[in-house]
Image 1 (cartoon, helix red, strand yellow):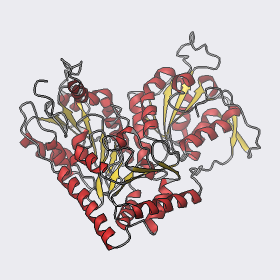
Image 2 (cartoon, helix red, strand yellow; image 1 turned 90 degrees about the vertical axis):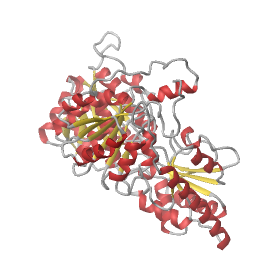
Image 3 (cartoon, rainbow, N blue to C red; image 1 turned 90 degrees about the horizontal axis):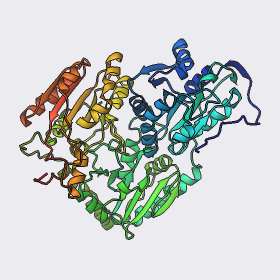
Image 4 (cartoon, helix red, strand yellow; image 1 turned 180 degrees about the vertical axis):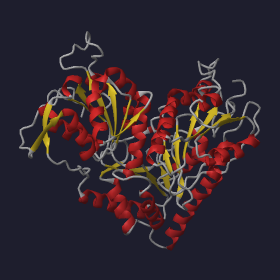
Length: 568
C-alpha cells in the first residue's frame, strides 16, 4: 500500500462514538489499538497537540531524542524487543526526511514502525509553503503513506495503518496529520480493541508443514535456514525452544538468517551458524553440498543465497508472501514451526539414513565450533578485534542485549560471540549505519534490569552517538564499545578489492572519544594493546553507570575473514 491521496471515510456503519479531538483520537489509536506505550520524538510545532495529549494523561511515555534518525532507530529497536508496533513522531518534511532511514531499515528487515508526521497546514503549496514538501511523494516509495484530510477520515486511516503494521509480513507505515487538523473535533469509537495480526489460514500452515516433513524425510543432507518472521507477534527469543525441538526431532542442522543470530542458542547441538554479509567461506561451501534448504520465515535474498545456491540445490521457502527461486509455500512460518515442533518433524527413515543424517549434523557443529574459536594475532597498527569478541563471548551476561551498528567489526561478533538463550541481538539486515547507539537507548529504557552493550565503529558512533544525551536524561546509560580504526573500514575493503589506488575518501580524523563520552556522563577508557582488552571489557560490563570502551583497532585486520592487502 503506497497511497498518496487523502483517505476518505468509508460507508460501513460504525460503532457508537465519542466526541474528542484528532490528537486524542490518534493517541487512543496508538495506545489502545496498536499497544504503543512510548513515543520517540524530536518535538516540533506541527504536532504539539499530540505531545500535549500524550503528556497530559500519561497515556504514552515521551522519549525526547537529539535527531530524528536516532528517534526512529530507537523506535525500531523497541518494536523488535516488544513484538509490538512502535511509534516515532517528527515535524514536517525535515523531520520526515531525517527519520526515513529507519523506514528503509524497517522495510528491509520487516518491523512494525509507525512514523507520525506533523505536516504543513492543509492546502499548503508544496513549493511555496514553508516545509510544505509532499510527504506522500517523498516517502511513498519506502512505506505506505496515509494523509489525513479531515476528522471523518480517521477510522479508515487507522484501519489501513493497522493492516500495514499488523499484517503477516509487518512493516512500516506513515501517518501524516496536517498541523491545522490536530485540534479539530472528531468522532471516534468508544472502545478500541487491539487488532489481532492477520495470518494465513491454518490449513495452509498444516499443508506447508506436511510438505516440509516429506521433503526432509527424503533428503540426505538437509539444512533449515530460520528467519526473522519466526518472531512475528511475539517478543524476545520465544521461537528458540520450538526451533530446537524441531531441529532435534528432524535431525537437521539449523542456520540462522541475516542478523537473526539469537533465534537459537548458539551452543545448541543443531546450531550450524549464521548467514550474513561476512559468513565464512567454509560455511557457504558446506551449504553448497546440501541437497535441501528449507528457508523458514525469511526470503531467499542475495545475502542468504550468496556463495552456495545454484539450480542443483532444492530450495523451499515458507513465508506469507514467498518469492524468489525454488518452491514457494505461502503460509505463516510460525504456525508451520509450531506444527513441526509438536509432532513428526520429518526425520530420516531407517537406521542407515539416521546415521548419515547425524554425521551431516555433526559435521556442521564441528565446523561451527572451529570457526568460533578466536585466534587474534599481534598487529602493528592496533588491536585485532577478535580480542574484543573473545572477551565478550566469555563475559557477556546471560540476560544481555547486544546492539550492533553496521561495519566490518560486526564480523568478529557474529563469528566469535556465541549468543545464548536469554540474550538478544539487535542489528539491521539492511546495513544502515547509525543504529547501534539509538538501539541501545531503546533497550536500556525497555529492559532496565538487563546489561545493554552497543558495539559500533568510529564511523557510526558519531552519526547517532549523540543519543547518549537522551540516555543520560533518562538515567539509562548503556555500555558502548567503539572499534576505532580511523577509517570507514568496510568501504576501504571494497576499494582494495577493486584495486583502487587510494583510500576512496575513507580515512577519518576522530576526536578524543574518551573525553567525548565523559561529557555525556559515561565512565570511559581507551585501550590500544591486546593484553588490556580483557580487563577493560570486564570493567565496562561491571559498571552501573554505563561505559564507553574505545578500542584502537587494526585497519590491516579489517575483517574477521580477511586482511587488507599490505600495500593499502
